[in-house]
Length: 509
Image (tube, rainbow, N blue to C red; front, side):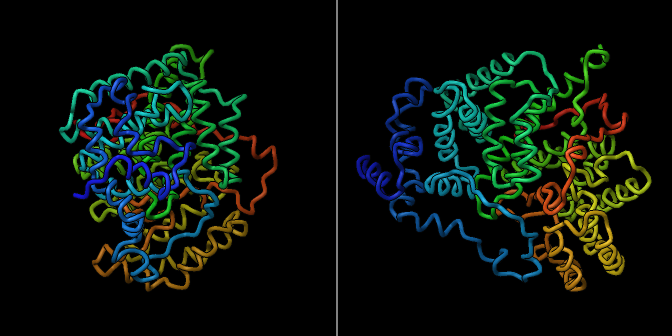
């Protein structure tokens, strides 16, 4: 292993990586000599020194980014080198990118390629702990780093590396986050006079370029009102959106999955308590109207993390939880979250097909299910769900019916304004049989993507949100925007809430 002295590392950091005083926390040499980490967290100097010797850090500076940047490229046999029909993804705008340095991006990429690397897991835990509530005052960013650090500390223990400082830091972080939640008082579901949530909704529907600003605003709002279910749900949703639409090789999908998983679990706890208060005193309490869709959000993030960490038992348990949310609580919504996940799974494909098809039938028989409609906050739900069904039909070999459904789509409500959907529809019309042939060749590696999915280098492929939620060319009146369709009574009240069968981050302990 190449040894690089402290001075050389620091010089490389400042001159090669371009890290300045604006981003001091990205300095690995600072971590190796950080008295704060040694005194506040109890990290021994030997561990800190080993960080500087990790091949990922050595290679980064020795090769001046080249090795790491090459590793981030699309590998052999992936989207750039295969059949264009396999590589095709629905185009979506993404005007801004996550704010992450080249160094952090490179190190995080190496970690995702080797999630069982104990030393690198320790390094990332220390990096985020240094910016967490363990060291810094309460803010949206320090809470965000705390949750990410919490994940890495848990992973260290899961990997059998529980040094004393790790256990102490884990306990302290949990206490500080619990204290923040207790400070928020009783759980509430308040979306009135809620600027951060309103900004997120406006961004989610009209201004995708502000997605990371919306995420930051919601995190600051969480500090102010940690027990408002709408705040916590908004953070869950914005991380689902941002993580789902990351580029193929973007490692920040890990951060989105961690934050999405933690906040989904927190929102479920809030929604459950809010419903219990309503059951005791319905005159003075309301239910959280989005409670019935929370299971799908939780399952998406935990399944991605479980898949990353090769935890097949956890992934199977999460699938079973997802089934309960689908069949017993809210099929119209979870037919989507379960369906896009099961579309990728040879063993679960037929179940996903049945759920998707049954939901189409259900939507045709009832007009009181909000997921089945095109509304201002999901302008193209029905269109997207039908195009996703086309892909299910093609993969199931029902080519003629898929072609018929495609021929009907230009006549569906809002189709003329569906800017992001037209190319996807035409792509399938022009390549119908060829797409079906790829599905039928018994080689899952060259299967085309479902309309909703974006391919990821790690974990599972994830769904995009803009295709249905961005208004695109659709214009809604203010009255329409302000009219919210509530779910029917049998969906609005959960009653018997499904239990978590894994940790919040998708592991079996």
